[in-house]
Image 1 (cartoon, rainbow over the protein chains, first blue to last red):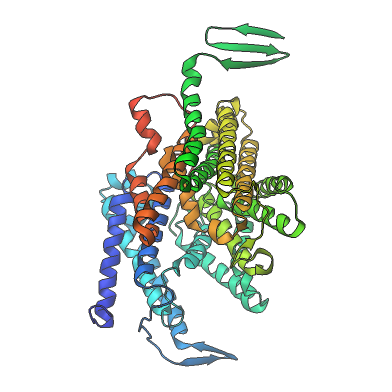
Image 2 (image 1 turned 135 degrees about the vertical axis):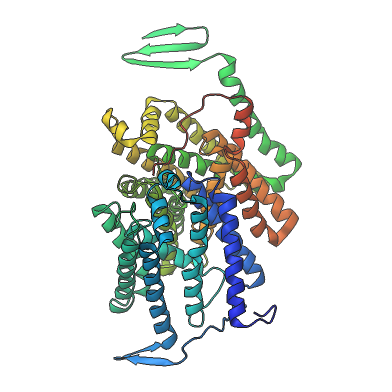
Length: 237
Length: 345
């Protein structure tokens, strides 16, 4: 936006294009080569995250900060005795809508069916005529959309800085492990469990410093009872 | 007791036990040459170019962390993404006891080892209840949460500044001589770890570990006590890594979670194991020296850019070197090595 003096919408489109390019490069350069060695993929992706963070830090140091003019709904609302930013309410609704669209995509579309088939069995999917590599690449780009939308929605409220992703990564790991890796239904349930856990510890017990620790304890307890997580990771829904 | 001299080995039989020592040169010549080089290197550096001594210490320590991590990985059949958690345990145990109770390094070593053993034992059931990516992701979180705790209880852990005033391990009056002694201590630690784990990986326990690596259910069905092997290999390796935390605390005189607990340090350790030779213990030594010197060269030549260039170079090497640096050697002269990495999914 600042560099080329573009408007908000062209900047968002350009951001999506750049991110899609990076995602495809990661897929072609790393994921295809080590498809069956998840540990290498994980290490490589962590490296990519650190490289992007370091690169961003050179251009936008934390001290300088970044302000994104993405306020969609200005003002505040009062719900009972609590005052909430309208942008936050908008972000919450956006989250629910995007999740719903994702669920519908996976359950009701042919492409979603292909994605589910690939997640069950790659070889059988190939035999059924699914272009597995294209599906993988499509998914790499598709998963960017909710992340970008979430960043844009929360940007006016919480600070945007190069290291902001690590905190979200911890929450994302907890949610996906608790829900059952790759299962959307389990992930949705887990995200609410972790969210409520954070809220209870942060606001009801009033010990916000223990939110991360309490969520981890919840996840460990659930894993002891159900090692596969809330839902089976072999299924998408 | 019976002692027998064979063409290639000495054999001692006592009671029901049997011990063998290889005497044929091909078994001990190369290791002896490599150990000799590692011992001579600090001495040469001390007399020729002393600023390299800290890099040699760092290389030895990185290798000494990576070697038990390889044991943990092979023994559990899972990849622990949070080995630095145990460095934190050992380091903080040593630092707190040294600062607040003025305990000698000998006693803090005991405390760090016990701390590592205890936390390793408590954490080890995770290798039973979680597998594959679940295990890796969970273990990734522990050091990050420990880092969070150091900030929450900043009065105790000094999360923002780090603990200072830890008694030094060595103090002979000369800074350079101190460094030389530290270099030999770190080398001794690394070689002891290498020797112990090499022995373990050549023993019948290695066969059990290899069976667990290949298939836990099959291993269980043929009588391997899978849980026991996992817990023992996890706990012992955690203790060994915690001792490295103790060394760091007494070597630097300060200890900060911000240095050792973040992901960047974990990635460095992993690259030692991966670039060295995909969890091969001898590859860890190679990887430790490679990473330590690569980092030094980048800092000297590119300054601030090194924090960006180092991960880029390591990522490229991770992608390009499928078998690590040791793999280049193995391609030329293949030998049967120790159990390798098979991470269960």
